[in-house]
Image (cartoon, rainbow, N blue to C red; front, side):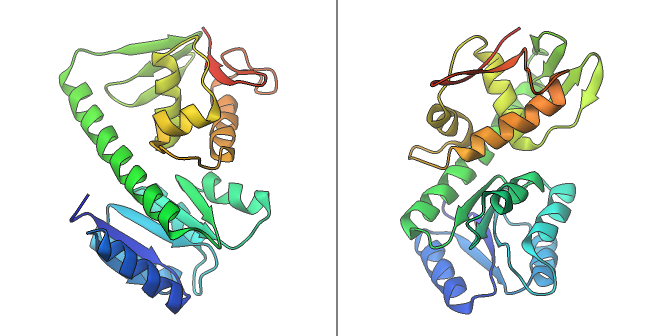
Length: 235
């Protein structure tokens, strides 16, 4: 991953310098910003491969920066939050972040997440390029159709707007239809985390997918829960 560019948007100067130091030690090129507005401008101009984004920022909070960035780019976004309320953490995912880390955090874990997110982004890029050259592959689950080559999903013939990670999760489950996966397994296979992550990330993405592909999300027919085990996709 050496040479990959990481943008850190953090108003705590000490933490910003610590993050910058550790990322450089890992071989990354590092861009920094101390407020949301500057962070947004830097992301637009610097074209980073990954963004580490604090929630509580001056001028423009991290949620707004994330929301705008997600409309403009598919760059992986890892949010940092000092808030312990689960609702606050879920908001970050709802506006387009790929994952979040709650302060205080282990620097080793943060670096592991950065590596995993960059690795996953590269893998998705290669899969997309490979799919565009390969014969069309359409995966189905009931009235849900997944066009793997074009990264598009349709429900009843109508296009469904999915985030990058929503699509990755749905495609993985569709390719392994009927097989049950635990939350930890999905973090490994979809997010690329080969360590114990926050499984709430999986639950949130499953919830959003159900809203988009199920006629009755409260009683799903396709993306179902296997109590005590995990999730599976059924036709």
